[in-house]
Amino acid sequence: MRVIVTRPRAQAGPLLSALRAEGFEPVRCPLLEIEPIDDGPIDLDGYDWVIVTSANGAVELARRRAGKLPRIAAIGEATAEALADHDLAADFVPSSASQETLVAELPRPVGRALFVGAAGARTFLADELPADFRAAYRTVELTPTPPAGDLVLLASASAARAWAKLGGSGPVVTIGPQTTAAARAAGLDVVDEAKTQDVSGLVDCAAVWRASSRS
Image 1 (cartoon, rainbow, N blue to C red):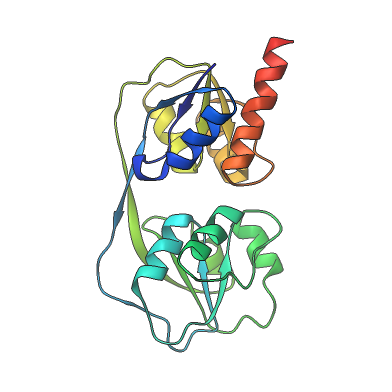
Image 2 (cartoon, rainbow, N blue to C red):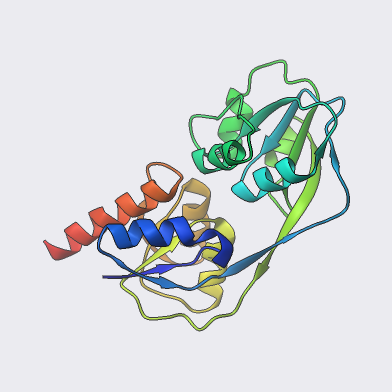
């Protein structure tokens, strides 16, 4: 079974390997490229919390942080794992991977918070907590020709919109609620949503869908 992997090329390795281990034939089709916004250190002095919502934000925080490190909140297990890969530990991970859940569950009083994310990111948590916002990277859409495949894996809302814009079709598995919402809004056929927001969650969903499609 051919599974289309849409993650950025530099981040696709673990997912490609996990799919092969489960007997899938992964097909690379990166839809996005990540560009750091190199505008100097991320100054953390005076903050009680720094918040990252993606592995890319975690990497930029680890690479460019300056000043005393406050408590770290991370949305999603993949984001927490990216922090750990750079010897940083998430002090708080909400029960589901959404800004809304983080805002509802982050311990009060929050104090002063900084959200490190992508240029053009949703501002819900920055508005609601409130939190200062620092754009540390941007996503650039690519325009590959959609390959043939049996199932498409989408790991971000940006990827969902990019796949739809290319005219991509076929059954889709998403990594979480925001990606599902974006995919459905773009008219894509979402057949399942990962139970955990990581490589294992995507591969498990693909395996369940394969089994159901054969029955």
